[in-house]
View (cartoon, rainbow over the protein chains, first blue to last red):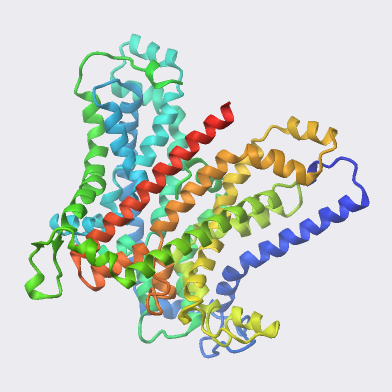
Length: 283
Length: 303
């Protein structure tokens, strides 16, 4: 560990400085795409990009944003994405809590088998099953609805697993005391299991939100109109509109419209977000 | 705590089953059932765009035989392998490197961490839309950079058969490295400091400490990160839709993309189901072997 080297010789200091420079060069390289998109989205639409002229062009303008908003119903896409995420989060919180509680608190016949069957969802991601799931959604008459985008995620193996692990760490004496006092199962859940699990649920909720905000393939195949289409599918549709072509300023504006809300929330709650991602491990 | 010490009620009760029921219904409907349905449908000839093949006819293993004799399928499998081998190790190594670089007490290091991490929270399609510009012929950044070093070969990255898959891979690595970084960062911050102090007293160099102490201590993190990187490599094809549409001539098509194409472009339900079964098998074999290898390694370390 370079920071651990105690007596700082000239060589060590030089090495440390070079390492710092290397770090920031790399970091700036990683930031270029986003920086370019922001700058390009503010270019005057009449000034096409050309060789050697791909960054600033004045005057800066928000015109690309207003044009993108008139060319595609991004407002509706927002509503759709947010409604889908709210549906998923609401149902997941309930299903995950109940299942994790059952797996942690009770002993019953077939428990292991049931647990492994649920965990199957971790090994075979829902995205891989889009062809047969499409048939199921068609059969259920849900095609081209927001519910169709959300419903495969109503049960979460990952959330169940995560919460069960946490429930198992709750001291046994505490639970036994609750049982002795005559707590019913929902009282045990409410007063003993849930309070220490709140951070886990928040972490799971945050990473679930980010995952579903970004999801593309399943919504793409299961929607067919703007009334259900989320932001990601809407953006791809927008890039393929005939009149867009290589209008990079306009494309960047549309891209940022899709990125910005989650990005701004992320900047504000950076620490919490990163912790959630580490903690929950799956996007 | 061991699960076997946990049972609190031995009375036979329906309650635990009822509590699991909501989760189980959705997992059964959208994970277990589709696996069975795909296996079943893969034995039938059903093509929705041809009137006389619209109703399924049983054909046994013919879909699989056709698939294994299909050049495009071979190409797709090779591409998938190249994609996995080209993105997983590189993004994991970069994630480790980034974590080492930003795990220092330095002013402004938080900004570097942010710059490495932010691609994680961008939707992949948005990231790909931005990168589309970078790959563009003539004034795209990649070609501009190549010209600056005196090379004017590749023009249009995403429509060049040799570069299309590489373009897709570049976006993947750029997007994922920062995500893997945070796991290594968490791992590094949990390392016992006294080990390093003892090693420093023994005169170990920075490199020796990195390879002999840090890296071995983080092997669990590496295993975990590699696993999620593999699964993600098989299930994310969003950027292919934006950048190359699997082209030119299938040069950047991977398993899941081909499956989508088969089902929703060619409307060949039977072949798409067979591809789903192949994908399920690949994922199962990979996850299980990974699990077994990790168990063995744990044993080896325990001895």
